[in-house]
Each structure stands twice: as C-alpha cells, then as structure tokens.
Image (cartoon, rainbow, N blue to C red; front, side, top):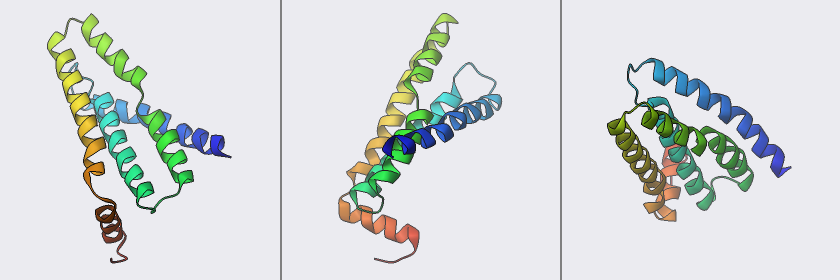
Length: 135
C-alpha cells in the first residue's frame, strides 16, 4: 500500500514540475532557470510544512508518503537542477551558474529549515490557527 501512495504522488508531482517550469520560464526572457528554481524552493517549503504537520500529529505517515515522498520527490528533482547548472556552464553563463547555485541552495535550505525552527507547540498553534479550529 505504501508504494502505491508514493506512485500516485509522483504521478502528480512530475507533470506539475514540468508544467510549472514551462509556465514560469516562459514569463522570463533570461538564461536563469527560474522554473527549476521555483519548483525546488516551493517543494522544499511543502516538504517542511508537511514534516512539521506530521511531527505535530496533524498529518499521518500515509499523507507524508503521498505528498512528501511521492509529490515532492517528483516535484523537486536533483537531476533537473544539475542539468540546468550544466546547461548554463556549457552556454558560458558563469555568473548565472553561481547565482543559480547560491540562490537555489540558500532558498531551499531556508525554506526547509525555517519551519523546523518552531517547537511542536508552535506548530500545533499555527495549524490550529490556519484551520480555524482554535487552540
């Protein structure tokens, strides 16, 4: 059953990555891979929020498999990140390579760790506040 949740999540995450990448990149006339950057940072935020919800008991391990491992695993792929970096380097865009690496790593680390800085009680408070159920 667990493997099925991961597959279903990946079936949504992979096309979502591609479509988001294309939609974002079409709006920017630059060599910088804004689409890949966007999906990686957003995926890290989703994974961090999900991990906080699971740690606070607001989400089950099945939800974590579906959304965390499946959806976010397919949404944020290291292969696309490394391909975009290599493509920039081959095109001679050295400044863009450095900027992409620094922005992507710092943005992803910030998004994935900022949620975990909260204590479990702060996490439960935030989830209760968002759901409107009170504390």
